[in-house]
Length: 486
Image (cartoon, rainbow, N blue to C red; front, side, top):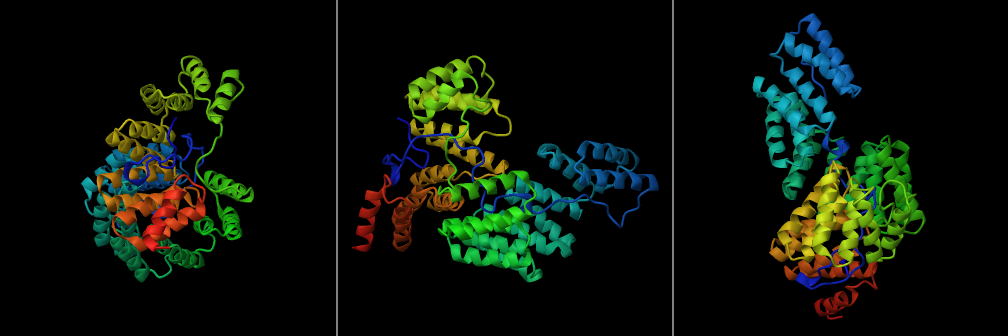
C-alpha cells in the first residue's frame, strides 16, 4: 500500500500511516506571502532624463515603452531593435529589451540583456533594480541582494523599496533577523509602506507569531485599503485561527479588488470550501486524468483511483498511456500512482519521470509523487531533490506546496539539519492553514528533540486539536503526558 501524502515517516523514521497517496488538486492554496509581483515589486521600462536621444530614437523608445506597458513584447522589441541600430550606447534600451523577455517569462534572455545594459553602465540604477527583481523571482536571493545594495548607492530615492526587496531576499535565505531589520528600515524611510508591513507580517508568520502577523497586516491594510493581496492573506490567517466568518469576510473583500482571474478563482474556491464546511487543504480528487472523461477507460480509471483499486486503475491507465494518452503527462502521473499503489515502485518511478518530461513549465504533483516513491525505496537524496523541485515548480506557478515542505522537513530532520527542518515544517504549517495537522506533529518531534519542550507541547496540542483521531494521536498524547506530567 502507498504511503500517505502528509508525511508517512513519524518519529525519526518510524512509519506512520496517514492516508492514501494522491495527486495534488489543481489550484491548491496560493502561497502565503509568495513571490508574486505584488510582493516582490514591479520592474519598469526606462527612459533616462539625463541622456541625449536623437529625435527619431526618442520616438522609437517612447513607442516601444508604450507597447511594453501594454505587454505587447514582440512589437516593443521591434522598436527597441531599431534604437540599438541607431544608438547602441544607450543602456536604457537594453534594460527595456530585458524587461520584455522577463514579462514573457524568458528569464535566460532577460539576464543576457540586463548584463548588456550593465556592461555599458555598471552603476545603471534601473537595470540594477530590475535585474535584482528578476533574480529574486528566480529564487536567487544572494545574487539579488548584491544588485539591490549596489542600486542603493546610485538610487538613494529608491531605498525604501530596495530595503524591502533586500528583506524579501534575506527571508528566503532564512536570515529572518536581518530581514526584519531591512523591513523596519524600509518603514523608517517610508512610514506609509504597506508592503514593508506585509514583510514584517511574513517574518512573524515564519516565527509562528500569528497574532503579531495579524497586527502587521492590519497596519498594511490601513495604508493600502484596496489590496486584494492583503485581504486574502488576512483570510488565511483567520482560517488558521479557526475564525470561519472572519476568514469568509476577508476573502470576500479580497474578491472586490482582485483583478487577476487565477487569484480570483482560488479565492472563490476557498470561500466555497469554507461554506461547505471543508478545510482549505491542498489535496483532493479532481479531474485526475486531464482532458475529458468521455472515454470509458478514463472513467473507469478515475473511479478505480478514487476507490484505491490500484490494480484495476493500473490496467486501464496502462492501455491509455501506451495508446491514446501517450503524450498526456497527467495520465502518466496517475499511472505512476496506480503502479505505486499496486506495489510496483520501480515502474512507478519511470511513469512519474515520464510525466515530468512531458509537462512543460513544471509538474509539482508528479515531482511530489516521485519523491514519495524514492523515499519509500530509501533514496533520501533523490527524494529531497524531487521535493525541492516540486516546491520550485509550485512557486513558479504562484502556488504553495505544504506537503513537499513537510516531507523536506522530515528528510532534513533525519539528516540533523534541525534549523532547516524547523523552517520547512513552519512553512508547511503556514501554507496549509489547518489542513495539514501532521506538520504540527512533525515540528513537535523536532522541538522535543532540540529540547524546546514548551513549544513542543504547544505543537502537540495543536495537532490533537486539529486531528484528535489522527494516526499519530496516541503517540502525541503519550509524549504530552511525558512532557507535562498531566
